[in-house]
Each structure stands twice: as structure tokens, then as C-alpha cells.
Image (cartoon, rainbow, N blue to C red; front, side, top):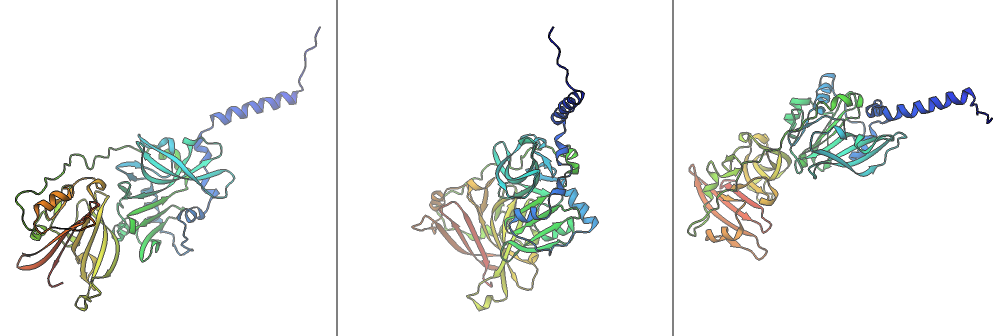
Length: 410
């Protein structure tokens, strides 16, 4: 009779624990991979991604405002949908996804760090920073940071939907640091919470970089994420083109209530900055002398802003003021709107729609001057409220429209 092979007891026990370990590994929650993720990193994560260092000059926010920043990072809006940081890729709102683009060199035995793209329906909305534990699948990577720009999406972080310092102070108090990290001479505002959460509001490009490596609430964060339709520009149709018998351009059109039209917003072209409101936003870019070539203008300065409508880029605007006046008391004098292909609804300057082609504009206005490079310009002197104004309209060959209107005493 063939003898049965008897395994030693310790081999049987070893096999049992080995099989049990495999079973546990398969059933373990991926959220547990990241429970202590923050312990594996320090502030160098943000510094590495940012590419510049604050060199210890940033102060930590108070307990009260640290809490407000943490809550705000759980209420990040991207094209109206809500995302809470950090969030596992598989827990993103309906229709959203993320893909890795490149690895970020960080020293960690357990985690790999990536830069990637946040997508909706294949369209890139933001740059994201993804942490992935060695055992995790690709969809179990965790988005711990995001760079949101008004060029790519409508964004807000808690109650802050712009980089304006007044709005930031209302929501998060005084910045931990204000330094020109991205564009020379234009301060960016950094906020550092007591748990290491971080937000950098980048004024010059109307963007925000937000980070949270605290994954202790990762599983509950998925319940905060929700999809909302991005229908801000639905229902708009292009404006009727100017037409009729040939005539000279009349700059007085710019000074009426419909001097500037963007979507359902309208205002005179010389409106005061403080009177702008509603869906119009201004991202401060810088201040320069108004006209250094003219000594009589020495007391005036010009402020430049990125023009936003419903949180999206629409162009560039400028205002003028005396140097000692606050920015809010300046009056607009230049509006430059991108081509119709690059904005989300139609706009008009001095009654001329951005959507109207340059040839038909030239056919209507007798004093239109077409240059060899394809650009077209025209000007007029006009009166409004007893004052004389000088108005210039320019349509560039690339589709950009610019209106300049100035009182003669400037």
C-alpha cells in the first residue's frame, strides 16, 4: 500500500497564514492604503510642484481660518460640479476622469506621485496631482492637488471664485504670504492651514493651485462630490450684425447703456470699476504710468486686468485713475475681447458684434482703414454729457476686437 505523505504541523500552519494573507490583500479597502499618506511627505511636495519656494516666509493660518480653508478644499467647484480634495479618481463626479501624464520625482518607498489631467468628456479642465500607493490600481490613485485656471474652466474654492485680495480676505483672512511667484511684480496669495493644506491664488492668470495631503477623510470625501450641469452659456445666440447704408463710425455708441455687451451683461464703455458687477470679473494684472511720453499725464496711471465673464476668459481691459486714487475709483477706457472662436458667447463693442466678420464691418463704415496685415481701424470724436471723447475701434485680422474711449482732458 502506498503511504500517505504527512506534512509537518508547522508547514500546514504556514500555508494557512499564507493563504489568509492573500485573501486579506484582495479584500483590503483601497482607502486604507492612504490612511497615513500625509506622514510620508512634507512641504517639499508643494514646493516641488510649484517650482519655487516660499523659503519659510509663509505663516500658518489661525485655527479659525485654517478650518475655513479645509472646508473650502472640500467644496471646490469645477464648471459647477463639486469636488472635495483629496479624492480617489474612481470617486470623481459623474462624467469626470483623470489620467496621468508624467511622474513627479519625489522620494517615497510606498507612493508614486504623478502630474495628470482632469477630464470631462475628453476635454481637459485642469492639471491635477495624483498620489498612488504601490498596490493601488490606476483608478485608485488619489487626487491631492489641482491647478484650476479660468482659461480652462469656471472654478471656485469655497466662497472664493477669483484671486481678488478683498474676496480672499473675506473668506480666509490675511494671506500666509503674498509674493510674485509666477509673474514679476504681480503678487500671488498663498494660504497655509495648520494641517498643511495649501492654496495659492495666482492673480496674473486667474488661477488657483490647491493641495491637501490629509487623506484621513478620503472615504467620506466621495460623498461630497457631485455632478452639476455646466449650462452657463446655454441659450445665448449671436448678436445681429450692424448693417445699412455706409456711414462713419460713431464713438458715441460706446457711451450708451449698451456700449459694451457680453452675454446678458451691458454697460457704458467708460464705467467705473466699482460699478462693474454681476457675472463680470476682473483679475488684476498690473499698473503702469498712463502715458510716459506726455508730462501732462504724469499724475495718471493705467491698471490692466484679465476680463472674465461667468468665470471664463473673455479678454483684457484697462482703466485709468490718478495715482493716489484706489483701483475701484478708476474708469474703464480700453476693452479688448478675444475672437468669437475663443469666447463662450457673443459680445459687442460700440454696437459692433465680435461675431461679425471684418469684411462686412468695413462695408458699413466709410472711415474704416484696412491695413496690409489685415487689421482694420477707425476712430471718431464724439460728445456725451457735454464732454468730448475720442474713440478708436480696432478689429485685428485674428478676430480680436478692441475699443478705446477717452475724454479729451486725459
